Structures are given as C-alpha cells and as structure tokens.
Length: 371
Image 1: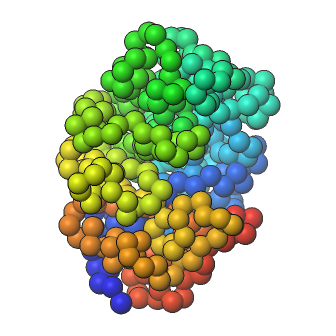
Image 2: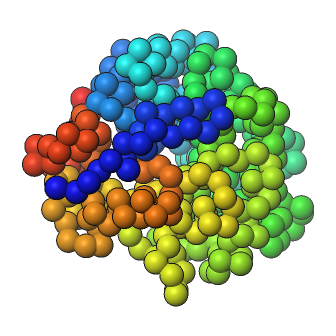
C-alpha cells in the first residue's frame, strides 16, 4: 500500500483553502436540459464533495455569447435560471465541506449551427477554422472579440456572486482560446495573430477582464494544453524557453493556478527531464499547478474500446507510486481525477482509506447517467 498522505495534505492559496490535493477534473456530461443544471446535477456534484474531493471543477459551462455552446444539454453560466441552478450546486457542495469552481467555456469554431442555445449562429473563431486550412465558420471581428471578452468577465462576476470559490478558464483542447493560441487555426494578420505572443492576446484580455471583474483575491485558474482534440500531436511550444515566454504574460494578466492538461501525467514534456507539463509550468512560473491525464486508470486517455481499470494496478510509470513521488517532489500541487471519479464518487475517500481494491473500473457505460 502506497503512502498517500501527500495527496491528503491541505492546500491554501489566499482565501482558497482545500482539505486535500484531489481535484475533480471538468468533464462534459450533457445532462442539463434547457442548459440549466437540475437536481440530478446538484446531487452528482454533491456526492463527489461528500466523497472527499478537495476542489470540484465543473463540466464546461458556456458563457453568455450566442455562439458559445457546441453540444446539446450543456449548462450555461448565464441567465437567471442557469445561475439559480448553479447556486443549488454550490450550496450542496459547500454543505459537504467541498470547494467548487465553474469551468468557463466557449467552443469557438467547433460549433455547428443549430445547437441550442444559439440557433443558426455559426462557429466563431480567430480565422473561422476548427481545423487548419478549412474555413467552416465566422472569423471574429474586433467587435466580436470585445463581446466574448465581456461575456467571460460577466460569467466570472456571476460565479463569484453566487458563491463559487474560484473560476477556471477553458483555454485547452482546441476550443476558442486555444484556437487563438494555435497557429494552425489562427491565421489572422492583425494584433491577435502572428507569433505566439500575439496569438495569446485574446486570452490575456479575457484573463485581465476576469481579474478586474472578480478582484485581486478570487482565484483564477487557466486550463491549457499542448494537444488539441483536432490533433493530438499539436504543440504550442517545443522548449522550456518558449514555454516560459508563453506563460509569463498569462501570469502577469492574472492567472493564479495553471491546470496543465496532458493525456498521460507520467510523460515528460521536453527531452532531458522527467518533468511533465505541470512540472515545467510550476518550475517556470512559481505558480501552483494541477496535473491531469489518466490518473487512476491503467488504460491511457481515451482508450479503445472505451474502458480502463481504476484499480491502480498499472505498472510504472502510470502507477499511484509514480504520481505520489512527483507530488512529494513538489513537481505540482494538485491532482485532477477524471473518469475514475465518474465510476467512483467516493474515489478520494477510498484512496485515502486504502480501499484501492474496492475501486470500480471505469467503462463508457458509466456515461449513460449521472450517478
């Protein structure tokens, strides 16, 4: 049995006090009819808080822009009904002693007309491209950019007002912010295009607007990734020096915590070091970092045929021991768990209590309902 004590040490950042280092990763569930989180969603998150998760990051919640949503039954974080639904979630999580942050989301050019809300609105992107060299949507004007920045700021303001403990900005996986970061989908010739520093301008404006909206003491998390759902091999940076140049302006704009999304937490980011993406991000910025990527599974991210064990019997390097050793070395501060928490609402408490053999295997059938 591994010594899991480091995973269950408290974490404090300003006013954010977590009971442990376990984070529930954001996972789209598409079970909010009318884009409003209902009682099943309340209970879903409450159970994870009761099960010992220190910080819950919700599924992606779409900001109040006509083209923000790209999938059916995804909750909004805009409008009176949706905010009232999220208030119930927040209160239920707090009653169990947990903390919770919404993930603020705009899907960008991935959207297809017809998804509600938004009706016939096309996908919006820096160059109207969801994939490189194929224009399928609307290339954003400066007015569009200002409108989306304002929508993110309003979502963060509303999240704070209804009691959330932090906010996470979705800047990963080939969605809108990442479409600006990624040269493949950002072919603009204005101040929002060009080199990576210029392509980061849109995200920097969003971060700065959110910081102004929520004040200096409210934690702002940024989730980012090298890989894109459109291209698992895509990279924004290839060296630590380039990574530092990318991250520093994001810190200056107001990021408190980086959520570094990788497909496999154990993979090194650059040659010559065992540090993963979170490890390098923490080393270069000094900011707290969340690692994520197939934690608690012995099959890799998005395995075929869609299932993987949650029993930690994987050999090195994917093992619990490897994860804990990295946490002990302070390569990162927090550990996000995804699919294993869908299969096991009490995952955190079970791991804490040494009940690894009782963990249920994740299977794609787990996605059929909110349990």
